[in-house]
Length: 417
Image 1 (cartoon, rainbow, N blue to C red):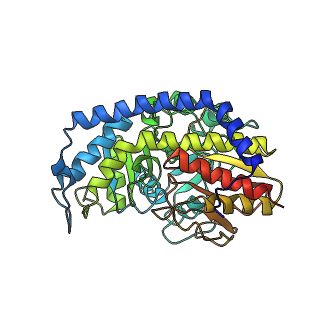
Image 2: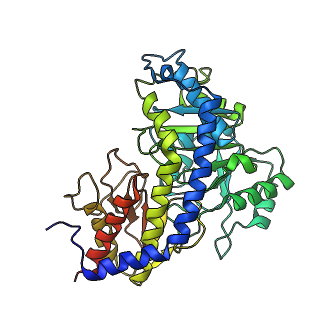
């Protein structure tokens, strides 16, 4: 029997959720149309043509396609320059290059959205001094925690940036593995204003992972100086096989490029190895693909609320990233949910996810990810650290139709004794 042979109860949940989500879906479509227009206009301005899809090898010097892609990302996201490379192996790698490029030994990195997610702890040195970490190189760390209701603590931020050792301010747009809410673009704008009131020269960095194309504006358009993210999340549109991007102020992008490659290379190197076509096409599709992921998240929120679980954001809440947090009373419920998502995947659907250790995490993690590209979170996935509170983080869905089937598969497993 197919895993998609749903019970009457699950089919009722589907119909109820679809009716409940109609207004949210309409808003998602409106945002997608605006962002698609923005992307398409940028493609026209930069005269994208088939010649930009040509491969380069070796050093990659003179790769015109890579140069246009850098400029295209800068244009779309509101920066002076861009650095888009397959060789950036993850969002964490892109963020690391950006932060090391901004900071010097003796300075302090200030995170104003609380502690960043787990994979950055080793980069900063929060879990011990690791060779090559910021702490190893004499770069300090400080943080401002959100208020009790999860909002940015603007007064505490103003106080913290008065420290003359602060070399960069960092904002994590998405919640990561935390219960705080993800930040809207308006909230990021207010943080930038608060920082500028006190310290107008300190550069502001935004970890933009999971947030691209969810709203009609991006952090650089409201006061940030530099952003970074992963191409196997939103901006790759489900086609990019790997890579990351860094966009923003030209001098900061150059510094990050020097860190990612070698000082003095200034982003002039980096063979594209025939992947340019996928990166251009993925960027073109990204607003639509993000809309599919958002609809999947909204639908999951409605279904899980109907089953009595806590969903954040709620189905009709405003969204600023593609992450949907779902909370469970017991670890076995969380595990069953993730296994149901895996059953709805196009790849490795027969695999049963089990909690296990992962680099960068201090506890077992369960991951459901039947993706065409390993680790791609613009494709339907759900993952969770096995620690209280038991919360799964759902993201992605290349098509809403397939994402909906995955969510219903998870609901079916939860309803089984």
